[in-house]
Image (cartoon, rainbow, N blue to C red; front, side, top):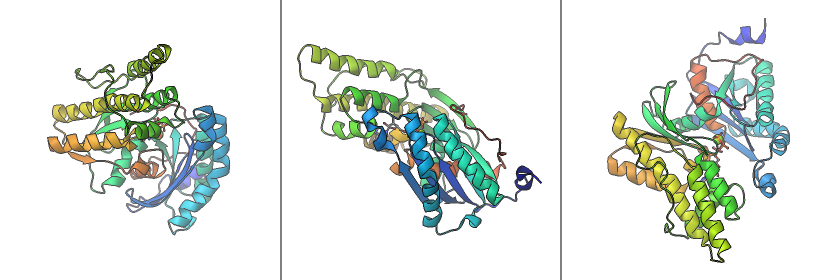
Length: 348
Ligand SMILES: Nc1ncnc2c1ncn2[C@@H]1O[C@H](COP(=O)(O)OP(=O)(O)OP(=O)(O)O)[C@@H](O)[C@H]1O
Ligand SMILES: [Mg+2]
């Protein structure tokens, strides 16, 4: 009997113990999660420091780092969870979106392990993973809710109707918000990854530079970050050309305020227009302290329930892949051994 025939009718266990593997960018991550919401272990081995001198992630360096880190990450996750491989009910793996060579390391590893243990292999979308991080934050969270997706490659306001049905109310028309953070950081001479460094600098600055309001206040839920990024770059270059000083702290703070306020505003607009009174958020930018404070304050003011994943579950991690993998497991969405990595997957 083939591997897939053996696993395709696996009896579904609501308390399933799932090993999740994530290798879409520069983090090699592995996590063990029980019943989709209880994280038993979460290991992240990052190659971020190897990319600093290049100012961004170098795909080949990331892939090579995954090949040496993947066994270590999984072994550590299994041992931290206090289980053995035979306790696993299934293996979830990010198959896209991300860097192809990087994804292939996790996909190949997960395939081989699932095959050798004769347990289901669950293909998981990285983006759905970011949104499912909120299920870890609140064990009782149930759709429907409005979710802010704010990461390095995506920016969207999403109506989550049920565990499997998403309606994208609006998304970025050009750059993603995280990408804008990273590009502005570069102009300010800050190291990769730019987001956390902008946040640090912004704490010492003021929001006193006039920047374009983007699509703020306009009807609808779409975003545009390319104009904001260009305005910041032009501001810095103009002042430098005139020999005027640039107060980097103020640039960081003004940019951060513009970039984040519009996300919060659109999420609350979605609450108002849909009548759905719960907001969640996911993606690396949701680790941003200003976003977290502003969203908390605005939700409180409007009487809206807010569920925010811990910072460590906002940036890339495998626990979120396990949370989403569990939902796919309940549906019996199992992959065969021909599962391939995909550089892009649809948001839905
Ligand atoms: N504290 C922070 N403030 C602002 N931005 C941040 C912060 N921490 C991380 N980021 C940004 O989050 C992004 C990384 O998030 P994430 O890891 O989810 O992106 P990705 O996996 O590369 O893209 P995607 O998830 O869309 O495929 C980077 O652009 C980074 O600058
Ligand atoms: Mg991500």
